Image (cartoon, rainbow, N blue to C red; front, side, top):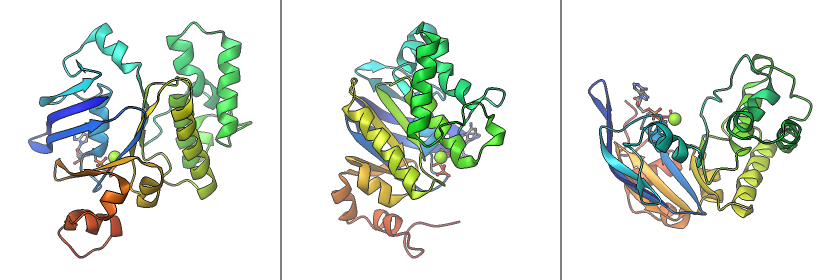
Length: 249
Ligand SMILES: Nc1ncnc2c1ncn2[C@@H]1O[C@H](COP(=O)(O)OP(=O)(O)OP(=O)(O)O)[C@@H](O)[C@H]1O
Ligand SMILES: [Mg+2]
């Protein structure tokens, strides 16, 4: 499992994470919710070593990862796949090349086999026949799906999904939920970490939900527990009310 202990991070004197502690169980889907700009993406980037904390620890199966460098860090990074909020595709590579990229770079698998797997994944997310297009020739939602396929093709133990279905139509959204679940039932024991503003999605597909608010985790429970939370911040957030303790400005 992943254990985050008292994680702190400031940017330009502004403290975004003020002591985040959270345990993320293996083989489950854990959602992280919270206000826009609250630090959810920053938290995910700590898990894959893209951002280093000012203080605090992150344990992945009892290995503390925040101080790792070089090969040691690479080894941990390979356990993670991340679907970025903005798809973060390589603009000079085609859709198919974007998806095959991690396997081509990191494994010695047969090229034909890699292409076959990539095309299979593209088909599953409704992008069959789009492989030869470049990122600027496809829609925003399509880019998001390519980013998803690129992360899924590695079948990592830990998958981080930052807003995986925002801006996608309901049919595609369901197809993506299926893919997330397939990973769970697949050959590796896959652990999903989901950041989403879509409360319906969070309640539907998560086993556990943590709410990040003002730099700390204020609630961590099952979806049922979240809905029943007596915390007015949680209640205001899940019902999207403009009245309550959450300030817009
Ligand atoms: N690399 C960075 N350098 C400076 N500030 C940053 C950096 N990354 C994030 N921030 C700041 O950290 C804060 C949290 O950003 P983050 O992207 O984590 O929010 P979020 O919760 O993911 O929001 P959203 O729901 O809108 O995606 C913001 O104020 C943002 O400007
Ligand atoms: Mg974000």
